[in-house]
Image 1: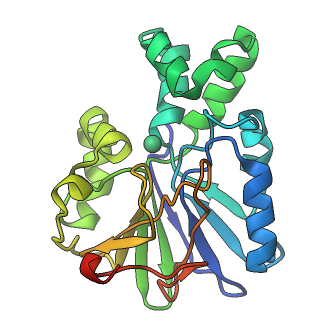
Image 2: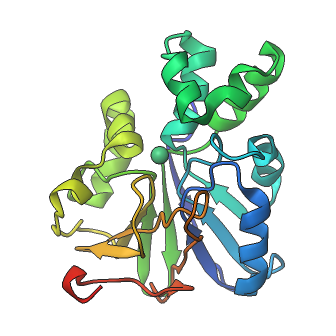
Length: 236
Ligand SMILES: [Mn+2]
């Protein structure tokens, strides 16, 4: 069984950043990291998932996942690829509309290689920082007490993963309920115009893969670059 919940110790030498959905735009990501002054010798980058589909460079996901400073959780687009290979039960026409064509057109052998790499990704990551632990997942946190997530991913694996990877409930309801037992939770999946925090949940998919820009959330300071986090929509 793959590790669905990954704990990452504190970065003692450099900074830790989370970034929103990449969707096959690794050149843009690279350019943004350069402007940020990201130092791969000391800093670490945490993707909140959806590395692939839509953009032109999805195939580069494998190289990125081999980098020692790069971490990622499984997004719903990685879930499409895994389910397609494992079960064949994916609505491929729908997935193609969402950018899955590059995968569907790969030889079966290579599809398996990608699916296996995606399967090794955890559904949630917990990163230690000087100010306390920060949680990362793709879409939404289905528990209101973060320390329960690990056992939920084990005992109710399918429904818990599905909520972590697909749900848009918090943003839809503008729900500001705190997730207890963790300093902050970081998610992508649902686009926002600027990084937005609801309760202690940070939504950072500012559509760098489309017409927006990549946002980098410093996990120590919980400040975002290039635009800081918006806490009050009325003031946005
Ligand atoms: Mn997504």
